[in-house]
Length: 108
Length: 120
Image 1 (cartoon, rainbow over the protein chains, first blue to last red):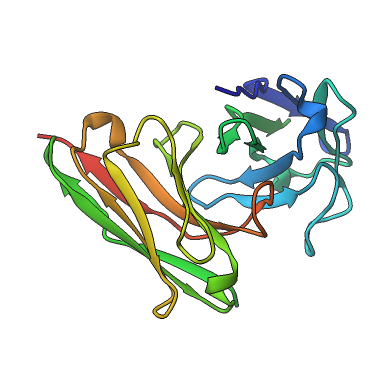
Image 2: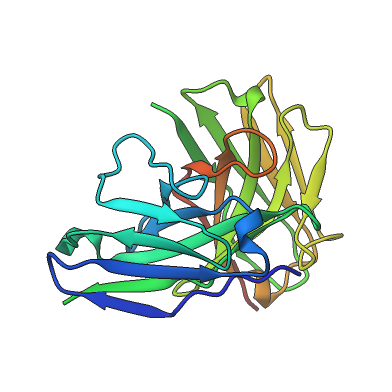
């Protein structure tokens, strides 16, 4: 089965840039979506189709998927960005949806 | 406002059954694929099952295949998950969520979840 690998934790000081990676076999050939989940809340879509932002998501959130590793980048990090972040793809071979293990972003 | 509201969670003994429901509002339910995703408190998200827009096609995670059944009623704008032969590993918060389009679309609307606890 397809596996997505994320670092368990990432930290950044306010105003800095946080980068969260998502690795998977031939991930560049897949569409990657990213979700933010704060404690006690449902996940919220922050990036879809590798690098598109839903309405209402700040421009500080961006994504890329150049081929070997997908990346979520949060520029000018704010305290309110502290959350768990998950990447997700649809594995066409199995017709299953797969989430990464999640990355906890700590704002220092 | 687009909304998904889950219900039906609760406590059940190992080997028991439970039926979850998800009520959709604020969008044309029949145009979307819908899914169940679960999360053990403090752990990550795990996809469970999906059903296509007209209900003609379903897919399940290996861990629940043969035990869970996903279904929908487009006339009532509802999604259901029938869970049988429950075990402790099924204890989790269950979310319903929609994907925008078929296949690789993102989960763009989520419910708030309903908790299922399997324990003797």
